[in-house]
Structure formats: structure tokens, C-alpha cells
Length: 138
Image (cartoon, rainbow, N blue to C red; front, top):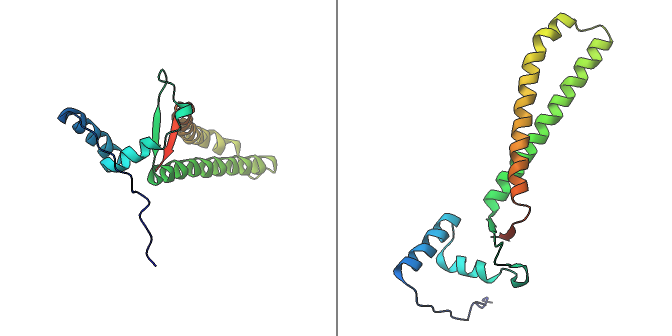
């Protein structure tokens, strides 16, 4: 049993070569064909578009996967850091770790935690810029 093509409505438009080149450039940057770009635009909710603040973010499966991976990486790093700090605290309380060693290790620990926090801040900045965007999943 064959599946019928639901795309039966034709859409024809005349434009300048510059306009067509611009559409092709946008489609290429989004990793879409020209037709896919037009179909994507046709899916935008008209009630949400206010010409003073139109901001469309196209998020494809690859980008969603990258964001998810980065968030999991941050969570893993934070979990490992918390576990390490809890272990240090335990060993200090039970006299199994010398304070002299801790004085040597703390700057390295702080540097690693600062790096994790910097990545987390960058991720939060990127995500907060998306808060007011209109998303189109492709």
C-alpha cells in the first residue's frame, strides 16, 4: 500500500535574483532546502508574531543533541566535584587527610571548579538569550 504525498498545494512566487540568493543563503545556513525553509516559515504561529520583536530560532535534532550533551556534561562535572569535596570533608573529619596536602590541592581544585562554573555560566547565558525566541523544531 503506497502512501500518498500530502504536499499537493503549489506555491509560486516571483522575486529578484538577490532575494532568491538571500533565501538560498538562509536555507543553507539552516541546513535546509529552499522548499523546507518555506515550509518551516509556514508553520510559524501567526498569533505569536509581533513585527517589533520577531526572533526565530531553528533548532534541529543535531543542535538539540549538542545542548543536551553539554548540559549532561555540566551535571556530571558538578556531581564529580561535589563527590570529591564530600570525600575530602569526610577524610578531614576522620583524621585520614593531612591539612598540608589540602593546602597544596585546594588551588587545583578551585581552578577546576572555576572552569566548570565558567562553562555553566556560558551555557546559562546562551539559554537565557533563547528565552524570548520563537522556536521551530526541524
